[in-house]
Image (cartoon, rainbow, N blue to C red; front, side):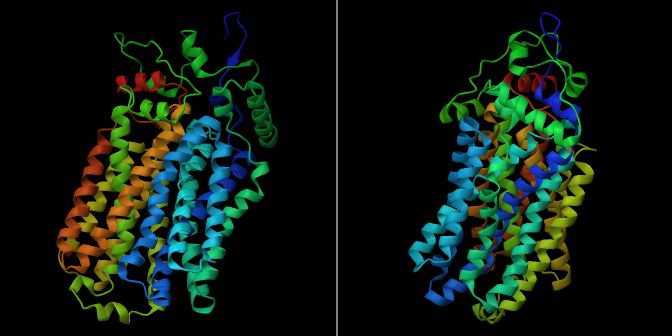
Length: 496
């Protein structure tokens, strides 16, 4: 209630009252297309490198650079687009990323030489770095109680993209060649541009910026499509409530009451802060612990996920037996497409597992258990195993790492206040890209050098440390309303 007794409501309360309906389904479809686009652009790296190497007579180092520059672009993009999104809006953030990804992706198919292809693929990576922006955008339309389940559904679009790209490559590469694969893979990003005019701005972002009239327009549209009504009263932001010295009780407030001795003075924040200021907020005393642990987990997730994808190929090439390069050259392209296609199906059980546990047992428990199970699946690979057992162990490990990757993308946006949410997730994603750049040195370099045991042990260490870091996270976010201010995060952290 306001000071004069007038009823008030927040964006979270409005979303909860209107529920999950047709509006959120359309938002899910739009954001999901962006995730499909990212998955397809990442999966095609498994097919383009070998084709271009054969056509242009590239060295193995030149071939690997085609993959590495994509991660370099993603590292820069994840940081940059997160700042743009937090300062200028979610819509503008993913508009620019879609333009860059679609344009550079299509032009890659027309690249006349190696240098131009490398530059264009780096630009594709720059655009793909905006993936966390769409994640934050979708998250901010979902009522808190069902957020975990629907974020898992959202992550399922990645698996759909990987399977579709593997199928597309299997059909296109032998018949039309790599240029057609690049051109067709750029289409999902183009669809984002086609339907951009229908995508609304995040009501949380608008409310935080003080644009309440626009916020109400979006909320009324949600209510109309969902067959519900916007709560009566005056729309207020959590920041305004804090400044008034008040607090709206939420589920996490009841479960995690603040200590009597706790300082609840709101931490100053500026919703219009620039990029450097937003990054510094991530390292403020209230957020530095969560941020540091999150960076380690993102690094471990990316290092492990992309490493397992590479290991699936390497351990079926004869390299696990220290075979000669001749064995690698003799492997047919058809078998390569088939292996990659089958491996992607391990992600479906991972998604189902995360969906079953993320809201029931919480984010921290789900991630930590999956990390430790992944270690168990990988450990026997330090010794030579039969082909069937190797495949089964890798399949199980990929289920686990898919589940942790899914849950961490649910957890990360929930621990940050709105004005640094995209920046926080974007910077964490950038750190993950470093893991993606490093993992080929282990999954490919060490295995080729007959150091399989060392490679597996390095994966074990990274995955185990990631699991420990998850247990050290300062708060559980299951059922928690999204915060608009740092002090809300601080209160929850101190209460745990």
